[in-house]
Length: 203
Image (cartoon, rainbow, N blue to C red):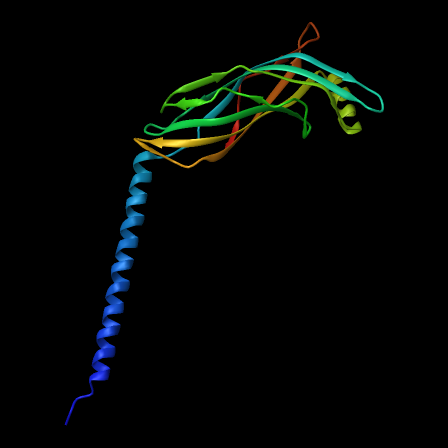
């Protein structure tokens, strides 16, 4: 009596599929393990930004139906790459000012370049906005802040960065930085920068 070979062939096929699935699973686990080890060794972190100084040279409000604001501010902002084995390429970096959720300056392009691991970069741009139209709510906020003797501006940086590990360079990533600039009135009636502030960084 002849044996039924169909079941035997089905069994061999199922066994082959199981072995292929097991091999794929092992390779996937090994790849994830290697990625985890590389992450542990490199420990990638975002660069840290600090607003070190801010000199308000002009902050003039022209009230009326078409109220405008003219601002000139020189800032000193620094970046530190805290990674021990990863470099950072700044491909583009634009700076501008916000006040009460409204942009009050033109975009200023900062010098770009490479930042090695554990390295510092310092920028000191002038940010200005001449006769920027503002809303009635912002006119009221300017008057209140000037009368109270304090002013909170926001330095924003927007750019593109790449990471460098050895000879490997990553794709471009979007970089967003927000630095609060708190200024208070001194004895002479001029606004002065209060203290160094850490910036929030999103990549």
